[in-house]
Length: 117
Image 1 (cartoon, rainbow, N blue to C red):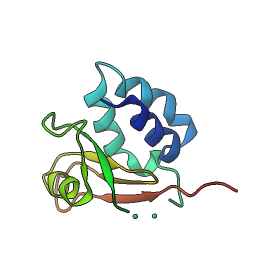
Image 2 (image 1 turned 30 degrees about the horizontal axis):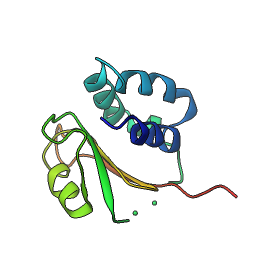
Image 3 (image 1 turned 90 degrees about the vertical axis):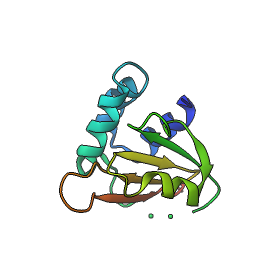
Image 4 (image 1 turned 180 degrees about the vertical axis):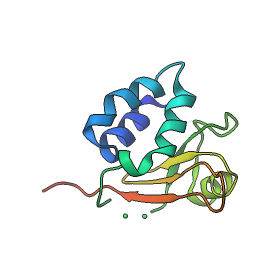
């Protein structure tokens, strides 16, 4: 796992009062619980007002076969979207979150980090 990318994601896109716990969970034996909890409660954990790009993308997923992969956007989307598993893909200033699918279409978020002036 790339702790730097995961730290960036959490510090950029997650509300302050949820960051410490999520970073703790992602960094240890509670990783699966952390990703699952995040994706189930993303609407409460995401910083509001965030938007989408290309280049290399990092995948955080409950599916170990793709968790930690770095790939191009089209490959990341093919791997992550619509497979029913919770996942997060992150690039320089953008993150895409797909919640776990229970009934119907999973909720998806596209987040964009804009530099503060």
